[in-house]
Length: 235
Image (spheres, rainbow, N blue to C red):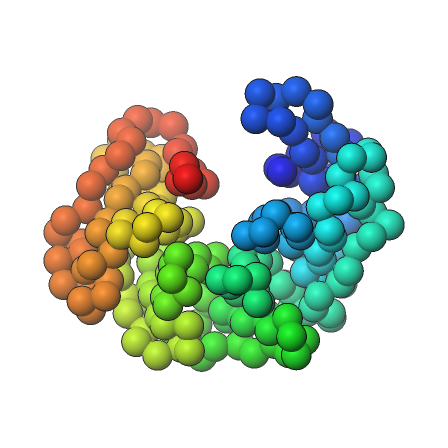
């Protein structure tokens, strides 16, 4: 599943891995972004944005056979806020996401519990925290914050404790993604001398050890003048 604006606004589309059989899933005039599959493959969560804010919306994936059919089966999860970057908690029991009262206001890392339909915002850095990435065991959230003027990678436990600034650099470091075993974190950074964003790898052990050696032991994955962004891992 992916995002395309080929119809004028951002909508969700589905394609086979070969690129065949592309299907438009959502057909709203709003902007649909950041889709995420549940672990069991039964649901997709995404953010729907318009002039009033951004809500988290989901649908069951059995609607995807018919073009546009999913639009009639949407379930709104969060209301009257500005919620982006949803990701499922282990066991599909809830969501972690970026939440704020309104576009342009500071955002926090939010948690939503499916069973109770309740949401909370973690204190985090107290600045603008966004783009959360949950470790595979559900124990840690890596995220981006501008609490120290530049955009840096931070981490904290799921209950908000253990707040750690992982990367100590004046560069812009964004888009963290955990490996499936939880032993590495990849992110995009403009710290290189060539300009643009490249991908870097960091061992999760330094995060769990209160960032000892994190900055000194980065592994640079890409090196070019283009922008390399949105990293993800193979299974």
